[in-house]
Length: 324
Ligand code: ASP
Image (cartoon, rainbow, N blue to C red; front, side, top):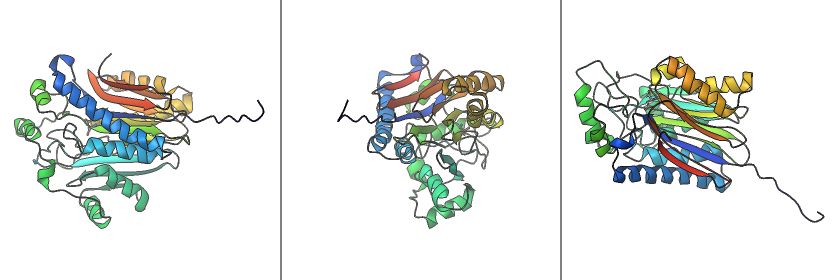
């Protein structure tokens, strides 16, 4: 053995999602399926490249989420859904599991990449959570890129909202009565990412346009630390997607942390418990992605499907849409 030195490298990994809901193979065309797979792979590789070059989990998830926010297929950034007032208000959050620092924004408008603004809140404000005009003013002050309303506009989301605007109903963009139409227009899904880097640090990020016809000012689970987004090196990094209200009441992401921290459950067992029991009991349709500081990953959902993908330094890569 003399002369040989062994470096035991920490496993690194990334997991992303593009929303969960009534996603059925019978409603999908091969072209659309391919478009989603290409989009997920592009985001996954953008995040993985950061990890491979020794970058941090925070930078990796941000890179992945930016790619998803820029893609009209997903309900985050460009392509976000409309509120009852006919405007787009976006929520996002990011959390660093090493420092337990977090940044979140809610009901922001015209911000090209809400995840960049959430990161700016985490790093360069003395706060965790900014909302509405205050968050927008902070974006301007920090030089975060803004775009006009037209940039975010998509005809389908607009038509989807017009169908609902005279009612008090609101819906997940991916649980839609006319799913075929929704699919044809190629827009679908809140986005999120979690990662474990070479140093065993983990982080979580989530970004969304929320739910169609939501009341203006409504905030979902995605930007709420502990509900839709949570990270702690001691346990897990989690990003959720689904019907936000039950996820908030279930404190979904932090509940996974608690089962691991206080009851010693594994990442997968803890996520299964929350998604298939606690959330189901509260009629919380959706799912979550997770990672722990050993680089283990999990993707769990109680809906018909969840756009999802994972890749790790052991050479494993999975891209999925439906229930297997
Ligand atoms: N959880 C998001 C919200 O309620 C929606 C989604 O995941 O699609 O705002």
